[in-house]
Amino acid sequence: MFLAALAMCSVVSGLLATVYSTSLDRSCELLKGTKQYLYWYSEKKKKLHFTRDTDRMFCLRNQYNNVVEVAARPKNADSCR
Image (cartoon, rainbow, N blue to C red; front, side, top):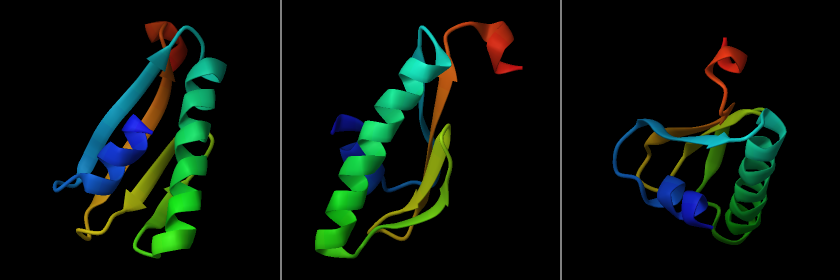
């Protein structure tokens, strides 16, 4: 819910947060939970729009008309290449 609140209320555009975890699967799980909450919220309020949505990242146009990006990455730097 914390990442979802940051994405909804950000007043600047661009890369908002990067989720690092022990593996890519674990960081994607956290991102998936965030997106599920945002989907639920957008059905109620209709002020959020996903401009890009993949397993590893999403871009969200929020109520301030800013596009914010949240990405999931593994902890190991070699896996990010």
